[in-house]
Amino acid sequence: AVKVGQARAAVVAAKKTLEAKEENAKKVAEDALKLPSLLKQKIPSLPPDVFDVGAAQQKSIDAAEEEVATARAALAAAEEGVVAAASATAAEDAIVIDSGADLVDYVGQPPFQTDRIYDHTPPGVVTGLAWTSMGGSTLYIECTSIVQHGEDRKGGTLKTTGQLGDVMKESTAIAHTYARAFLHTTDPGNHYFDDTALHVHVPAGATPKDGPSAGCTMITAMVSLAMGKPVRPNLAMTGEVTLTGIVMPIGGVKEKVIAARRSGVTTILFPRGNKTDYEELSDDIKQGLEVHFVSTYEEVYKHALNWE
Image 1: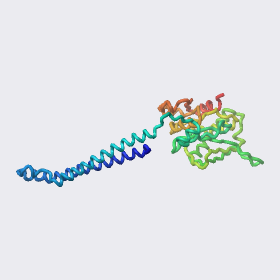
Image 2: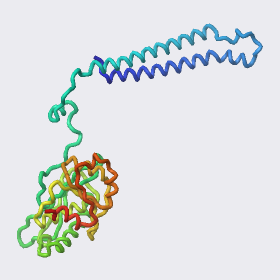
Image 3: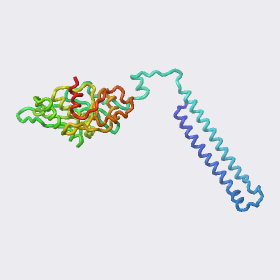
Image 4: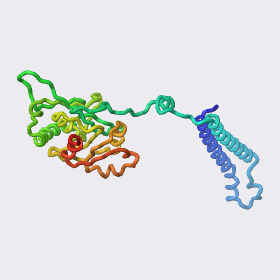
């Protein structure tokens, strides 16, 4: 049986042919009437039969109209071909597709895989959300201590990897400064940052990354490591943080929400300045999510690390 796609392509071709034949027939008729019309304007006193179309011109008009009729018949046949192709390929019984292996056989592999690499994030690892040219994705921030031996150990230092851009490197430095101050206020007896050299890494090192929206994620990763506490399960966050702990609005809210759902995130922390952006999203995108809007890092800490 002819495939439906091929039959539809034949219809498109037949329509173009018909349009061309109709345009040609119109032109032939206009050309045949030019001389009689001109004579009638110049010498209206001539006998009426002089203004008739000549036999040769009439033959050309009849041939052009016959080509139009043939093209119309070809179009009708092509349209019937689409119906026949659709009937030939239609299944008599409904096809039941299993959501597992069978689905891949019919439609192929999913275009977007989950970005999730941790089932449970340990202390020092936090899930962030990023905007990319392909939409949104989850972005893990990993923070760990650098093992040092001997008397030349240096606490309070910071190393970054993951092909971070200049803006993201600045965010890391801001996060380190703020995290040290925050820990001193929240847990005065904890001197972890004074005694420890930190290494912050963002996985997928071959992919360049930049932007300020991972600020709150970086601070949380550092504080989580210092306190030895993992963040709330299935939580992701995004937001730029200033040196004084104010959480600034970000872009790409819709894309980040979709990325969170794709990775199994159930709770999201957004800057309060993005509340309107979130509320404008359709209900199907927001379904099943618990979202909190924060203005300061203290609120981020309450939801992410002081939730028990």
